[in-house]
Image 1 (cartoon, one colour):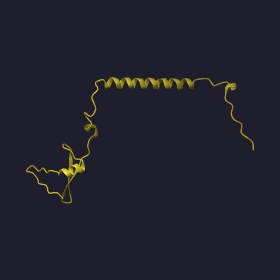
Image 2 (tube, helix red, strand yellow; image 1 turned 45 degrees about the vertical axis):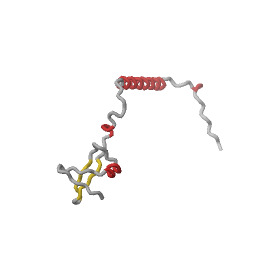
Image 3 (cartoon, one colour; image 1 turned 180 degrees about the horizontal axis):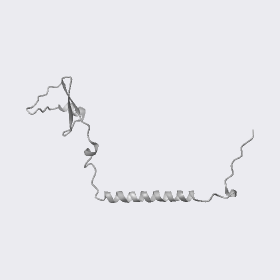
Image 4 (cartoon, one colour; image 1 turned 60 degrees about the horizontal axis):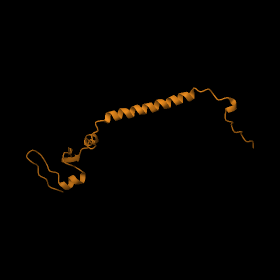
Length: 107
């Protein structure tokens, strides 16, 4: 157990060994609860979206690239549906071109 001192403003320093063990970094938020006459601190969940801001380089053309890829995807989907529609509307093959069904063997 580590003894900590409360400042005039109510602040308490969490020892470095505990911060490192729990993964608490400067700027992280902690929840504070009173539980059965004791003060309990635990690390608040981080926001993965906000924490990832600035992790990747900014590409000013991202919007144009996104819409170009989306348009290509829609074009491919349209072509697929056209092929499927054409196959569905074909006339059935004449009896002479239909594949023969295998005959059932008699015992």
